[in-house]
Length: 497
Ligand SMILES: Cc1cc2nc3c(=O)[nH]c(=O)nc-3n(C[C@H](O)[C@H](O)[C@H](O)COP(=O)(O)OP(=O)(O)OC[C@H]3O[C@@H](n4cnc5c(N)ncnc54)[C@H](O)[C@@H]3O)c2cc1C
Image 1: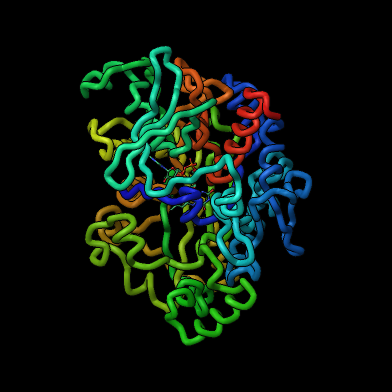
Image 2 (image 1 turned 90 degrees about the vertical axis):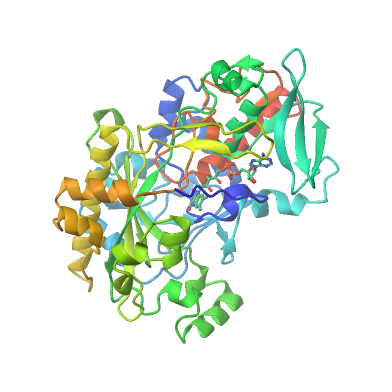
């Protein structure tokens, strides 16, 4: 499976789908109950608000009190709504899910069956508002205490003999360079690369490091362990009324109207080209796991297109795609197609990040171990079946075609969408990462609740890797909150408040 990350300023927020989703309030209360002091919902809410510049949409119901309006990170709704998003929302509502603010407190806690809403996006004036454009761009070159080095690959943290982090070594243009830290070193390289940096610096499981001939300076058995991620299954179907002026067709200039739409977009920042295609989500509980009853373990999203064949062949490396998938129907501009995404958002299966070698440019070795816990398969099959219930409900008012089951699976497992066997095979063959890796330096095991690396002085981690468990929703909002909160902790601990 391809595991892309954004190798740029702003990291993966520079290439993600821009959906702004915080997770369930109980996710954070569960972190706190597990020992992550000061990371409960009431503790983190002010930091979500601090970064946010939320622009409400008159037609979309939100809980204004949970949103911030003075931060640098623009959060908006799409305008106009894409064709067919309303049909998805209505179908969920007809099935007794509440339409509301999935980032709200009340919405997530009190909606009896679950909550559905159009996505809030990190978009400003029709353009991506990444962590770079929100937090860094304006300060580039403007602050005497800020130096930004691009094309610089950090290879390890430098520790002195008292296990204090005193700097970082990095490679740029073939040279090995280093920087010293006056106060602290903060790793923000993401859930794959922050543990790799710790391991390369001699902080990790002793036996694992010594097996590679590396000196273990601090024996920290959980570094790189407990890797969590969300998986999703794209379920394609024909959807004639969705794509007559489909966003993908427009974006790729495949329909004559594209030119006009681009002109409108360039002038106003609005219209089809300003979409990430990933338009709305329903969050609910499958009820298959009592231990996850406090949160939502399921997400179903509406995507207003089947993407492009390259998405399946290049991004997801699906072998013999043309032979097994209904390519003729999936990308038929005349007929229109769409996908519903079934997403497993409270997985129990855990993977790990280890070292593939000792060279500075060796990539990390990433094993996700997806679907190794039977409970994950059971929950995921339940989410897929609920996805079909939504699709059938949509079909009562809209013209929609059949679900396009991959041919190789249909010939072996049949076409009965009630069959657990068919769904499990579909998941095991074609589910993809939703790109939300977390928890490889999690609070409690690798870092303390102030995100300081245990056993090392003056070294913190501030990214997705510190999450005690993955949140029940897309991860960028929580990562930005983590950045805000750790920044406040650093200021407090260094008495610069
Ligand atoms: C394709 C894709 C789509 C996504 N869609 C969404 C979405 O719609 N909504 C959502 O909420 N989330 C989404 N996400 C997830 C979200 O973007 C991530 O959870 C979030 O960006 C993670 O933040 P982070 O700071 O932990 O790591 P990252 O954002 O990955 O940042 C890590 C940074 O560290 C740098 N780095 C790594 N190693 C080194 C090194 N050795 N030396 C120097 N620099 C290094 C990287 O270049 C990068 O800039 C998506 C992610 C991807 C990849």
